[in-house]
Image (tube, rainbow, N blue to C red; front, side, top):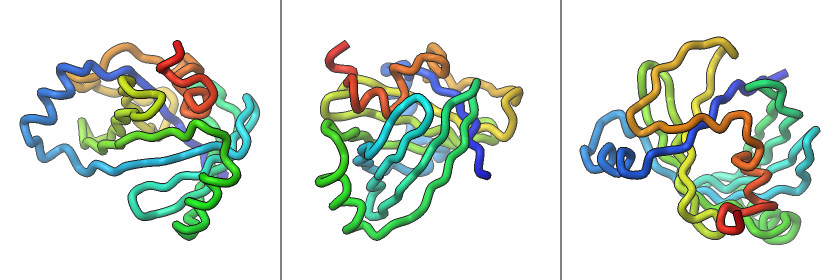
Length: 162
C-alpha cells in the first residue's frame, strides 16, 4: 500500500514573490493543474487531475496525523478532461504548482486561481512522520491539521467564500 506523509503550510506572498524574482535554480518547475472530485468524504476521496498535458486518477484514504493511503495512476488526457467536465462537481480546483528543491526535499507551492484565488499553500512530502524539516523563508503558518485547506474541502467550500 502507498502511504503519503505530508505537511502543509501557508505561503508568505511577499517572500514568495521575492524568491521567484531571484530566478533561483531551486525552482524546478511550474505546472497548471485542474482537478475535481468524483467522491470526497472524511474516509476517502477519488480525484481526477490534469497536470499540464497528463491525466491522473487518485484514490486517497482517511488522513491520520500527517499520513494517509494514496494510490495514483496515469490515465489518458482525454479521459481525464471528460471526467472533469462530466463527473466532477463544480467548482474545479485550478492552480499553478511550483516545485522547489529546499534542504534535500521537494516543496510544492500551489498558487490557486478561480474560486480559490488569493490562496497560496506549500506542501512537503516526508518519508517519516517525525522527519525534521527546515522551513524556507517564504513558508508561514502550518495548516496540516486544518481540513479547510485540503483540496477536497476547497472544492466544496472555496477560499473566496470564507
